[in-house]
Length: 100
Image 1: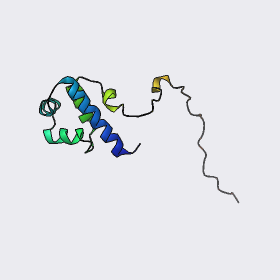
Image 2 (image 1 turned 60 degrees about the horizontal axis):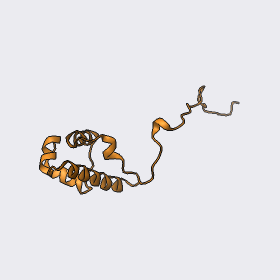
Image 3 (image 1 turned 60 degrees about the vertical axis):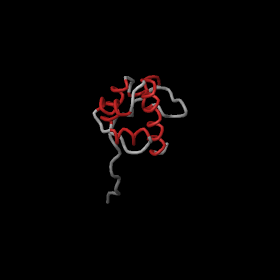
Image 4 (image 1 turned 120 degrees about the vertical axis):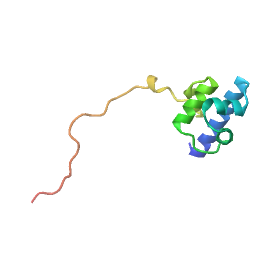
């Protein structure tokens, strides 16, 4: 997924969460500790929100961070449900120069 698509979908999910809470952009921005202008840009799918901003928005909107970040169209199994296989142990391949 392209980053621009991700940010647009994130903005749409933030807007839906705000609508569900019945609050204005000003109220959510104040509660999250960001400016109204930054919040408006995020809802429109512009900008580059930091993890700190996303966490603050999730807290202000009373949703989880994963609720805001779940923007993938195709559902993938959660990481905890995937089979995990540790990497092979041992020496790393070294520089193989011909010895004379």
